[in-house]
Image (cartoon, rainbow, N blue to C red; front, side, top):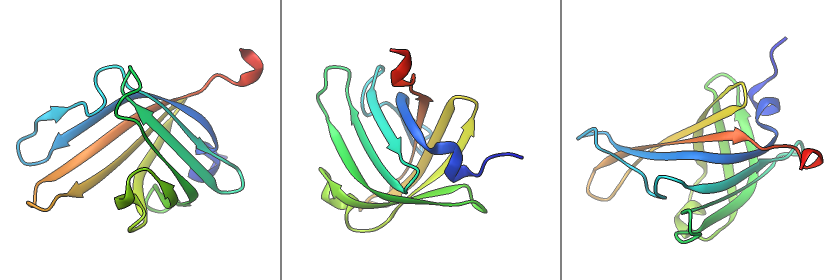
Length: 133
């Protein structure tokens, strides 16, 4: 039997890539550069925490709170309770999620004040267990 999405994401994941695509022009950009750093944690009791930064640790972003999974739509719901970015506190954050082996892909679309739509895709690799360090 395949694990549920919620069960599959529990654990620690390290950021591999972060690409933001302008859905009008198709242009890709890498908001945190070509070698972003990051760690996202999902706990069995329903908490999550994410930290992301550029390779030199500038452009640092962190947020956390509770999470739930909608198995029917493959969507993770991040109920952010603490964040360096106040806009993440304003409304629940939804991430389309897929797990393929040791890779977790999270994506979300956003429309800015000008109507420009951006789809961000973050790929995470399951972190090496601390017992193997």
